[in-house]
View 1 (cartoon, rainbow, N blue to C red):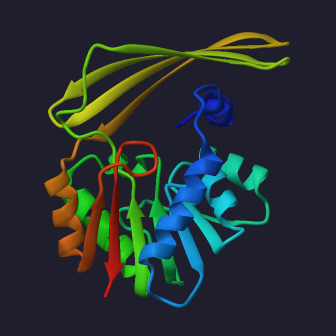
View 2 (cartoon, rainbow, N blue to C red; view 1 turned 180 degrees about the vertical axis):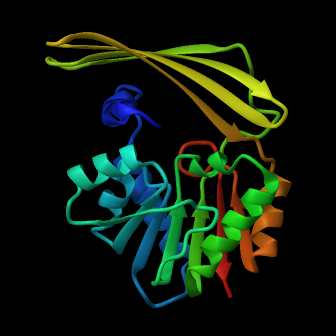
Amino acid sequence: MGSKSAKYYDDIYAANSKDYPAEAGLTHQIIQQYKISSGNSLLDVGCGTGIHVNLLRKHYQVEGLDIDPYMLHEARRNHPGIRFHQGDMVDFRLENTFDVIVCLFSAIGYVKTKPRLHKAIKTMASHLNTGGVLLIEPWFTPSQWHTGRSFTTLSSKPDTKIFRMSYSRRRGNISIIEFQYLIGTSKGIEHEKEILELGLFNKKDYLNAFRLAGLKTFHDPQGLDGRGLYIGIKA
C-alpha cells in the first residue's frame, strides 16, 4: 500500500480477522517439514508492516524486505529489533543468503507479468542456501478473479475510525483493486484513494518459474488461508 494509509494497514486487516499468529505457526510447521539446510536464517520478501516476520523471529534469525517506503516505516517503527531492507523482489541484491525465504499474503502478485515472476523467483532462489526452502503464497488465478465486486471493512478504535470500500476490475491478466478510505480522527475526516494492480498467474506459471529457478517444487492447494502455497527446495 502506498501513501500514508499504510499506517492503518494493520488495523484494517485486524478488522478483517486476519489471523497472523495462526499463519506464522503454520508457516513454521511447513518450513520444518521441507527445509534441509542446518541454518536458521529467514528473509521475508514483501514483508509489509512486518507482522509475519516479527512472529517468526521466535524460531529464526529474521530480516525483511519491501519496496514500499511507507510500509517499511511502519515495520521499523513497530519492530525496531529487526533489520529491514528496501528493495524490489524482482531484482534485489543482499550480501547474505538464507535458509528460508517467504513471500506471503500474495505479495508475489505485485510483479504483474510472467517475465517478472520468473525473475523474482530466480532472484529469491539465488539468495537461498543449499537445502533452503522458499515459500510463496500466490495471488488469485485468472479464473478465480471476479470483476465488479465491492467489499467493505470497518475498523473502529476509540481514537480512529476507518471505513474502506473496494471495487474489483481487470485488464488482461492484471487484477485491479480500487480502494476508497474514510478516516475519522479527532482532527476530522480524511478521504484517501489508491489503486492496486496485481498479476493473475495460474498453477503452471508458478511451477514453471520454480523449475526454471532450479528448485524442487511442491504445491499445497490449501496453504495458509486457502489461497495455496508453492514450496521450493534448493538442491
